[in-house]
Image 1 (cartoon, rainbow, N blue to C red):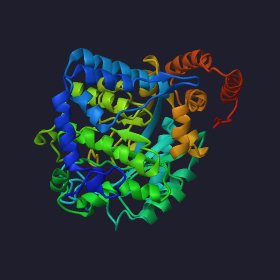
Image 2 (image 1 turned 135 degrees about the horizontal axis):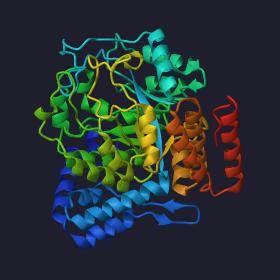
Image 3 (image 1 turned 120 degrees about the horizontal axis):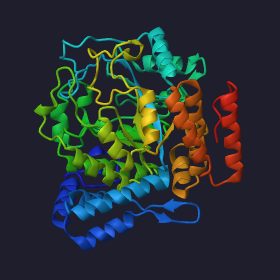
Image 4 (image 1 turned 135 degrees about the vertical axis):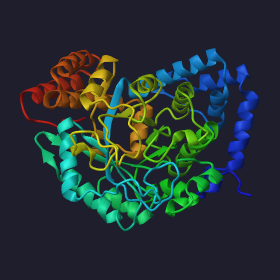
Length: 482
């Protein structure tokens, strides 16, 4: 029997079923132990230091105790601390991105995804390089600067060479004042050699959702295709980091398996990356299973309600305080609004989950990977964020200044990253306001920027930011960054 070892490179040892089950039993037994719970909450709380804040985070077992606790006043305290951590390390900034679907050809048999091989109903489509250029122009005309490219797994139709060529095409498109400055990649698990090629192509974060950490369920949910190999899939992030990729993004698809099991596995995976590579995940995504083509989420009996979803998000934020958290347009405006306060630091906006969807005047549904709940335009999302006290950020500076991996985490943990992120957010927001915003969004945005500039603590940094924003307003100069 495999023994739990977070430093192991074997999936069955760093995501150990026995350890997860013991953790869940421990959490259930101690979910009303107020002395222990208050000790855990005190450990999670951000502590002010000379430069900013520090956090100790929580182990998967400690965080699981909080998740299991159903005492209302304790839950309110968890939410309060989650909000404190979010503001301490990410402030009121929300990074904006969009997915770009390149191809829905796929050889896997995933039972929760409409791209599965046996689906003969969904039209199959793969973008040509010229179609990718047109999609990128459409995204640039919306105001996007950061993309996450998505593709089904098909070694014939979507080989790595196609992904690499597509990345090169995306970076080559310069339209008016538009540029895609960072491409994150969400494609199937691959080899160390291929991860090195992705790194050399200039990607930002490599994203791969585990879907479920429950191995028996994983094998049943992925009955055919290369994704059936649980170990190869689960060990992908280690190969990515060995291949030179600094920033990796984890995630599970909540609704496939018991959420407490998934939560423990997710935090254990983050602990494993920290133990082996010295840096945990750059981001964690929290998607929920949604309807799509021939997929009915009601057939899965592990769905979670909005309150449970909020609790999961808050507990992740307490466990891994320095990790970015992502929520997509799978979720409604109401759900996203609630979770933004509890730890979310990145959102998608104006998203289309169909292949070639951005160049279509009407939103196409025939090749969507999932139903989009939040169908507002990017401008609507930007305005909504600002009206709710957030700074929409289109910043990609850390990637391009080499502030990735352990360098980013050390700056984040020391509080120094705020000296870059806050002014960068305001400058990139100013770009959006000048080039793409509606009159109402522009008026609200500049009022917000005026107030936020006052909050920059360093006189020199504030002075430079003010000057750069004036240059953005009065010229075609763009892409200022700290």
